[in-house]
Image 1 (cartoon, rainbow, N blue to C red):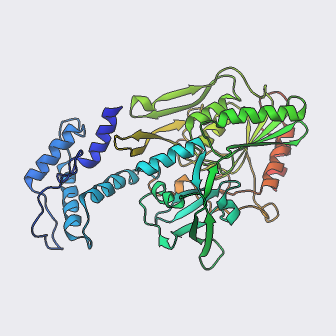
Image 2 (image 1 turned 60 degrees about the vertical axis):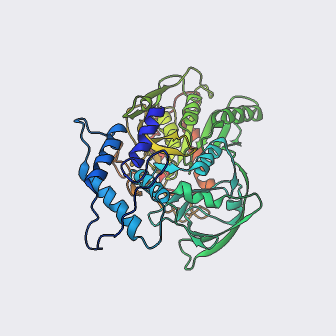
Image 3 (image 1 turned 90 degrees about the horizontal axis):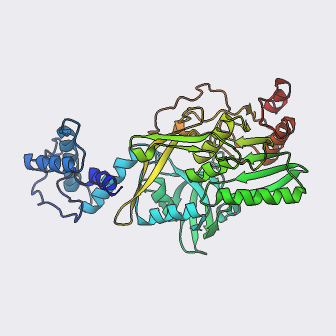
Length: 473
């Protein structure tokens, strides 16, 4: 693994003759910059140095050569920025920008994480951190779009809504290179306040919202009885202990029901994903056997197949999975596994369509690389990348059923700049907009469908006679 990591880092650092990977020692300064209308050419010695470094890093083409024109172009740009940028800029800062740019230019989910960002990622996975409690994604203009405020956090209590766009933090426009870095500024000591400038659809002027930071302990699982015999499980994200918590909550529902459940509504709406292993464990809880998900990449560690072990937590009782346009990544893994095995009916709107896997590769200095290393495939072998999962029953928004619904901007993976090519899923546009339905409507419709399914047996396709009223609400 260390050799892989070293090669990846060397790919960023050693193509420039000015900086060495270890000590960041600058080369001799150039006395006179080239005229602005002429390219800044690299010397033959510089190109030779870069070629040797790239070859040593394992970047050579199969014939042992490297793209000299591209190396020379990079060196020229580097020198031009170093010499002519309006402010003096250090080699370290230039190389950090180069590394970040190399990764962010690949796809929307690859990124270079400094030590703080790496720690933040660990905290998110463990379910506790200090911040305001909001999931964000970065737009091309570097502003942050709120995917969703996390339930019962300072952001939700302050009135931050899904679809809001954060354009400034404490009066300073956001200028970070990626969402992982920009969201760092939303964190701080518990009790401290952060002032956000927020653009909201339907509101003419930006809103100023002050949020007091707190320790965010994300409860990734919530549960309740909808009515006797029918349970509700809400998974808001996938953390290390999500599957374990789900089993505990389910056992509590059985006790509360004074006996086995007749069915469960599994709510994955606006679940942005999280740990792949946690989603696999959750799927395994409902499946007796078969493939849950497979991943395929260029390196051996990126190729894996996850299968279910015997034991179904529900003993075959039916499941309805609620999804929307914010159901992404690991939550799509769980949805795809249950749908392909006909273990559940999927109700809602087409999912986000993030069918890629990111691997975090730690570096010696405490930083890390979050790199897209594989695509994942549902049990039937389909990739949902940029297409999403089409629900078995599509909920249709109306003025009545959307009265109390949170806002949605209909963004999916396919709308993100630089997204990976589409997978081989269903290309049909049917599946609905990325609507976020009001709780009472969506859960009520899911319960109606659940009651039509055969008890203690794998679900079958919804009969046409009962599907119509669901899709017309």
